[in-house]
Amino acid sequence: MLHCKIDALVYLARACILRIALCVAASATQAEPLALKEIAPGVFAHEGLIELTSPANAGAIANVGFIVGDDAVAVIDTGGSVREGRQFAAAIARVTNKPIRYVINTHVHPDHLFGNAAFDSPRVTFVGHANLPRALASRGAFYLSSFRRMLGDELIDEVRIIPPTLTVQGAMVLDLGHREIVLKAWPPAHTDCDLTVLDKATGTLFSGDLVFLQHVPIVDGSVIGFLRLADALALVPAKRVVPGHGPIVADWPQALAAERAYLAHLVMDLRGMIKAGDDVGLAARQAGQSERANWRLFDDYNPRNATAGLAELEWE
Image (tube, rainbow, N blue to C red; front, side, top):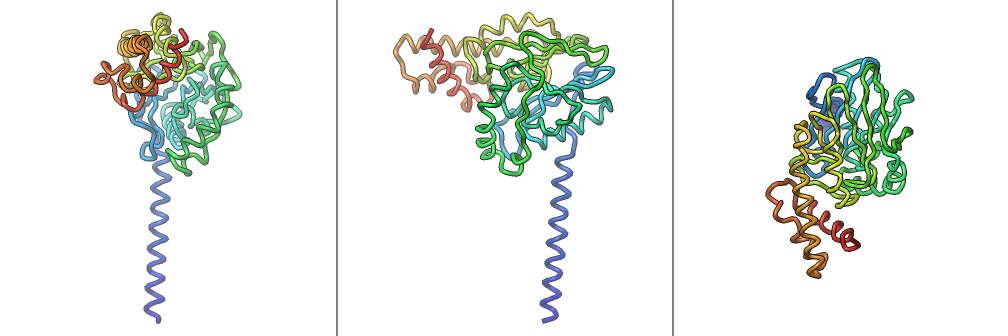
């Protein structure tokens, strides 16, 4: 009987040690800073994975970044979970002890703003497109529900939908201390609440998902608007761009070429199919297929783009 009790105590002790070790490992994972690259003086970014959202990547699939001025820091997007947001905040703290004054969300999608709660503070102003509060109000509950299925309870329980208190309609300049950044709100394209951030000092443009590299573009606003926007976007006086997804930095405006080609082929195919009387199923299977080899995640998103594009173009 004594041996049984000792064995039971040893088993419980080992179980407790294992649980503590797992908790410590999990905590370390959450706190470990994101890898950063300084892409221009005072401008830093982290490259997200070109993957679908999953528990394994904790939603860390979008590019995020920040700009450091003499007085303060502006964060551009916060990642796909609060865990990633904390890792991002830890990375920023390694670079500078200047306060974060602004958190700028480039649009409504969860992979760009589910990390917001990690930055929530009375000293921080959340900034977004004038349409972003409405988009979050209409989509927030759905995003929390659907991403709970993708990421699990642990990652979603701490996510909070935080709308901007400072909104941009047209353009706005923010001063970080002898460092001005220009925020511009765009008409419907990737979404109906796309915002870009230009660091005037270095000519670095944070485009959000108005620019995709390698990752196939996603249309959640207007396929025609997205295609037409390329001409206006190319006029932004930048030297380099940090896209929403894909390699962390690229020359500007050359970075727009592949995306423009994809959208042009998709629109051309859809118009031809509408003229031929083809149905939505055929459009989803065939439209844009000439671009398939040029993009990752093509089969995951192109059918959705084609379906949405067909519905839009039918009303031309």
